[in-house]
Length: 362
Image 1: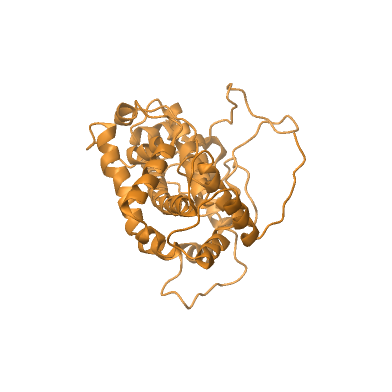
Image 2: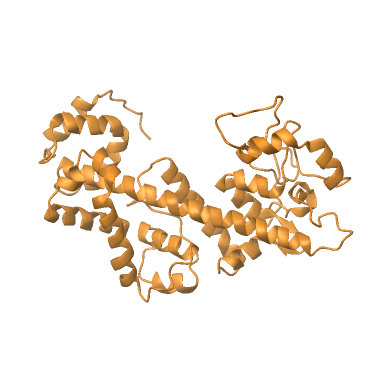
């Protein structure tokens, strides 16, 4: 372990060091344009893309092209992960409410939209060895709703009227109209509840799920149960994944990739957590490194039920990976951000960068 040696540099001094070390200047952009772009990106983030080229000769155009491809890729990832998240939310609500409808009339859970607050509707929290998790005082840990998910429903102490909207957002509408104490009496009675906060106006389950974070949704899926109805097993089955214990790694990978994309981390050449491949996804991914991005991209298509048309991985690459590069090259917003670099760059140079990126993805 070493002591951190902080070096305070501005963009000009940083670029001078790169050029003195042999980095080729841009063929397409002025020095002022380069400086403006890197000032927007930030030196620290830009360095991560410089390191990708440390063993090859390259130009600043190469680095910027990789950066802007990664920025474009992040936008695609955010759209796909959001679509999967929406599918998870819908599936979770429909499966749980469907189960509640089938319960006996004398069962407190029957058609109870506040069932998620009842303590017996959760599995025990266990470690990887199947032992009960305990807190610092040796007491068994209990399920708690994700803090951000819960905090969205903090009670209002005033009537909120937003005159800029034609109708109220569902969150404000609910908090302005309904009272938790009345719902507590009607729906929860003498049931033992999970840990709750007095300042939260807990809504029906479908309201809560709609506003929940991805991490909060995953937490519900992993631990909710309604009698013998295991929510994790049922959601996994709806996505075509068995056994259900494997589905946890699918959810954790989704959360990992989504968080990296949300924070605009480098994506194309990173390593990702592996998962137990299944079905057609397993068939197509046989030759892929399970930790690299192309496997992650294939996984997205599997989760969205978009893989059936592909007979082999080369067909997938030819269509979907090529589509990424075509979209990137023509993207209006990327062209503006790159000072038209992505449009100006010559075909031969673009192909070289494309091949470099694909090697990083594989």
